[in-house]
Image (cartoon, rainbow, N blue to C red; front, side, top):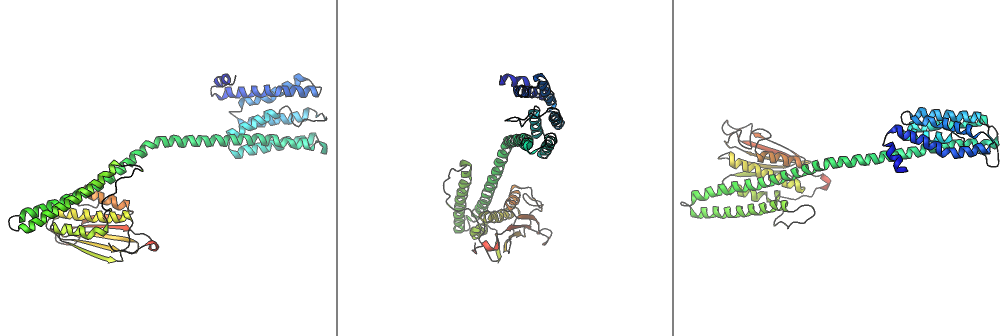
Length: 415
């Protein structure tokens, strides 16, 4: 029966209202007939009065507040017209009270909380005041005050149902939104991880291949005139290529392991400023004179800041070696109270708009990677030709500012 009624309604508000009004009448009819019999009144008249109180429920979906007002008005008329018959167990509810409860429930489920409670309080006040006027006396006071509970109970139940529906709708909306954005979020994370690995691969490969190429050129040039120096250059090529393979193996290992699956422990820790001297020595051996200047009190850097500083210096010197031609470079580290300033500049005669150089953002992968690393560490980076120097030997300058940890949490160290 319930399934048939649900199929008949089919989610149409008009049919639902008809079913509710009919159900209200059928449920209250036996009680109304018994009340009429107990009062020795006309059962037909009572049923007609009940029918009249249920008719406004046919429009409860479209006009919930006016329907509630109509049912309350019918309840007031009932209290005025139908005499109260005292007995050993007097009635506390009238014929139309069931329709009033259904109408107030509809108001609570279809309007906001403030409107629902205002309507319920007005209905309770109107019914109770009418009952106190029509049925005065202390002996009738409990029955009269009992009319307050019926409208308030209906509003409370309706408000609880509405709140539960809103909660479920919110949960469903969040689930649908999460489902829609899950694939987009997954693609975004994959892109970020791909870019991170691409930066690592570029820095490792470009730096070491540049050094190997320079050292190979030195070995080729000295092979006949100075075999001893050529032999040492070949040794540095061997060491540089081995280091490149180790770093490349560690970077590619990131692609083979995901989630909580543990990867094999790297042979060496992640590069940082502690290895800056070795990095500069490698460039010096490859033919690029590099000077290092430090100022301020060195502090222990967060891992991401330490790696970022190292990679920026590495990439800037690699670009100098590749594009500046015969030049000297200078690296300055300034440990300030709140940030680390890194400056790498050269006096080369390379092209002002060379690959990976030129404007502030740069078009090469190395320059783009330096900007991305600086932003990921919470800092900034600028790059461009120096303002000093000659027209043909102006040189290039890379300047980065990376935030340092709070002064209270610093631990002095020296890289």
